[in-house]
Image (cartoon, rainbow, N blue to C red; front, side, top):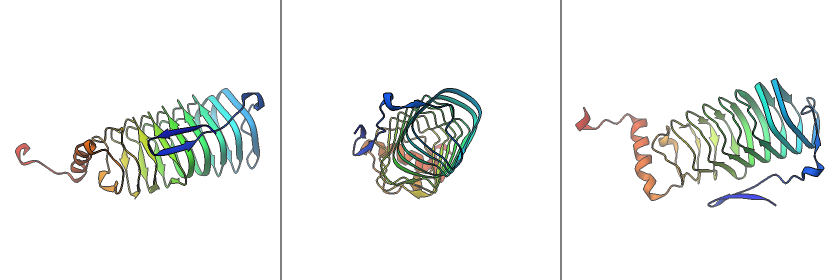
Length: 223
């Protein structure tokens, strides 16, 4: 079983044998099931799918101008080098799913259940995560998250590493044991919500600066 480990967090990765994958021209129909597939090198005006199951597959170099995915179950699926900016993805279960070198600029990800889900070197600028639930390991590694938002999420035990968190907003939610080591925390928003996170001692100054910014604290010598 392939894994990715960031400090104390280990996520299982999809296990795929390229020789067993069959090239497909779409991700199937609403309400369908697709397994042992490869969907690659496709440009779409719209990507839409609902009430479907995707198992043991690779989605690579797919570009969609817009998309709407809902009520999906994904298991052992990887997205490689895709541009799914402006995607709306709702009420879905993701188990052992890996996103690598993908663009999800401005994506709205709502009500996702995340279990062994990895984002590696992905562009998530302006993305909105709402009511996401970490049911297992969740890792953001080397990702760009400027002005992304997490609202009403449970990111307990999730790990962020070497990510750009400039103006990333951590809204109300649960962040117990969320590992923020290895990141510059000075530019994030919502520091007051980050109860019980894990940081290195030297990051306390960064987090305090973000906390002061959130509270609008002024220094007397600057007035």
